[in-house]
Image 1 (cartoon, one colour):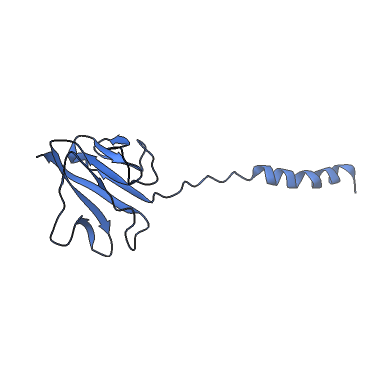
Image 2 (cartoon, rainbow, N blue to C red):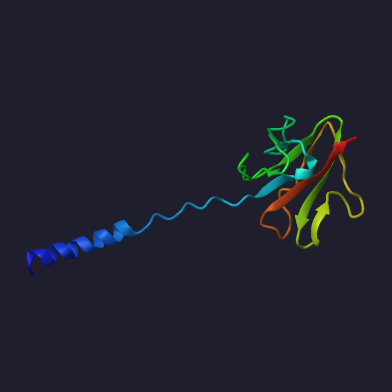
Length: 139
């Protein structure tokens, strides 16, 4: 075998390995999040891990989620509603037919500020616990 053929046989595997792309790094899926509905128009306090002694860890602007670009959290433990405001927390459950309010059936929960409140971090049958804060209003 000639020198050129041997060199070519050695070089081909190197070219093949170098041309293989680097796989993209997959980010872990969010375990739970809080969505501050755009209609709320102001930020709410959000808590990364429950229980906590702090009122909140960050402010989540209206129209944003805790697992979105503003905070990029992989979980959310609770939220805080400031003095003079009320809000209604909801969670999503496929098994229960979609978005449901917190509380027992027929008994919606209204969080009256100043108050911090835990979110659902595990919902049966769901891979991500989805929570929404709706109807933030003076009360």
